[in-house]
Amino acid sequence: MEFVHKSVLLDECLESLNIKPDGIYVDGTLGGAGHSIEIVKQLDKGKLVAFDQDIDAIENAKIKLAPYMDKVVLIHSNFENLGEKLEEYNIGNIDGLLLDLGVSSYQLDTPERGFSYMHDAPLDMRMDKSIKESAWDIINLYSESEISDIIRNYGEENWHARIAKFIVEKRQEKPVETTLELVDIIRSAVPKKARDENLHPAKRTFQAIRIAVNRELDVIEKVINEATEKMNPGGIIAIITFHSLEDRIVKTVFKNLSNGCTCPPGFPVCICKTVPKLKLLTKKPVISSKEELEENPRARSAKLRCAIRL
Image (cartoon, rainbow, N blue to C red; front, top):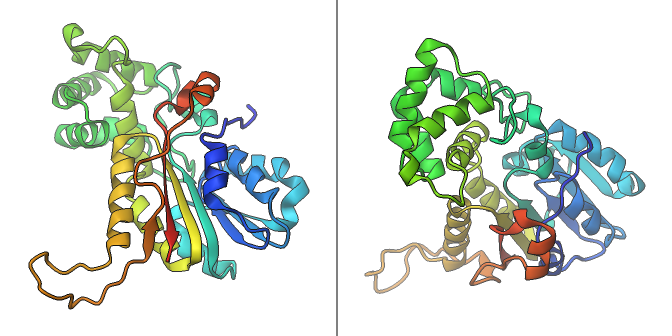
């Protein structure tokens, strides 16, 4: 299947990054290379460094970015390794970082990857297919309380305990092997009267399992801190989130790095000597226009937050 992904908030991201022709920019979530190709088109002597943990994205980018490969460095790695990889590739300070968090359309629309609750496929959900633990391991090997915690914390699902109980009971008969087997279990666990007509009953649980498999929330704070240290003054960090858990982390880390002083509120004078490293560019997140939502309904939950390096 061709790696197709419609870039969300594309114009807004390019405007926020304020790309310099000789700058060094990092796309931490290469995906279908939609953002990357528009960034590299604006570079002259500059460089684009693109990360993705999905090898399919890297292989697709070699084709899509072929005319620009003299300005591109492709890195098959999670963006959490930003600092380490920049050093490994002898890349100094950068002028911008873009992160488009969440699952790409390619991953959702490729049934065998196991991300979708709409297609039958083996339980997988790994963005990096080389990692060992998949959704199958969580569903079949984790304890009931561990599964319940994952669904509650990462899916904000009210019926987390009941869903976990039903999963454990079902796997005692035989392992839960496929996505639609899991959907059936979730559907039976969520009472009919409690179902939201506008929301698939498995949506929150699938989100939670995917986040756990790929450690999606664990890496956000780390990459923002590392990017801040590697960023030239005036460089931009632009991050698109797709649900409240991601957005909350980005908002909090941006706020902490822009506040500077960490002394308790009651202290008469600052003794920590911590200075602000970032300045917020978006007090409220940027969201998709009506026109974009008509073209790409998957953009409806996207939020863009940006900060500039002081």
